[in-house]
Length: 228
Ligand SMILES: *Cc1c(COP(=O)(O)O)cnc(C)c1O
Image 1 (spheres, rainbow, N blue to C red):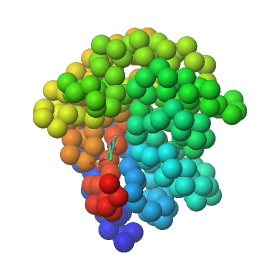
Image 2: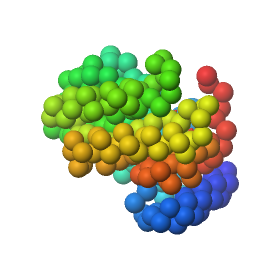
Image 3: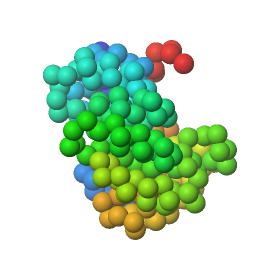
C-alpha cells in the first residue's frame, strides 16, 4: 500500500516539476497539499512517512478527529479547504494551520473570536469563479472588500486567494481570472501572495496561471471511500 502511495506521490511530483518548467517557474516555490478527506488517519500517517507535511481536509469533524489521532506528528501542517459554519470556527481554528475558504465577513469574525492563544491563523479568501452565487466563495468583485475585512482582524493573517475551477469552463481561463483577483488582493498586503488552485484534474493549468498551493487528492490518495 505504502509503495503504491509513494509511486503515485512521485508521479504527481514529477508532473508538478514538468508544469513548473513549462511555466518557467521554480517548483520549489509551489506547495503540494495532499487532500486526505474521507480517508483514515492511517493514510495521513503513511503520507507523513513518505515526507508529506502539508495536508488538506474539508470537514471540521474529520479535521479535529485526525489532528487528535495524529498529535504525535507535530510537523504536519493542516489546511482547511471546506465550507465552514461559523459555529465550527473555533474548532477549525484549534486544528488548522491555514483556512483557505473564507467566504464572508462573519466567518472571518468567528475565526478571529475563536482565537484561544497568540497564534496567528493563515487565511485565504475563497473566490467563486462560477456564475452561480450558491457555489462557495465570494464574487471576484467582492474579494477586495472581504480581504480588507480580514486585514482588520489581528489574529488572522491574510495569505491570498483560493478557488476551484468551474466544471463548465476551461480551467486555464478561469485561473487567469483568479490571477487578476489575486493581484488585486496582493496589492492590499504584499504578504497575501498565495494562490491556492489546482486539483487532480487541473493542477498543470493552475501552475501555468501562477498557483502557489495545489490541493491534490485522488491522484495521490487513490479514489475516496464513499462518504458523500
Ligand atoms: C476534494 C477537494 C480537492 C481535491 O480534489 P481531487 O480532485 O481529489 O484532487 C481540492 N480542493 C477542494 C476544495 C476539495 O474539496
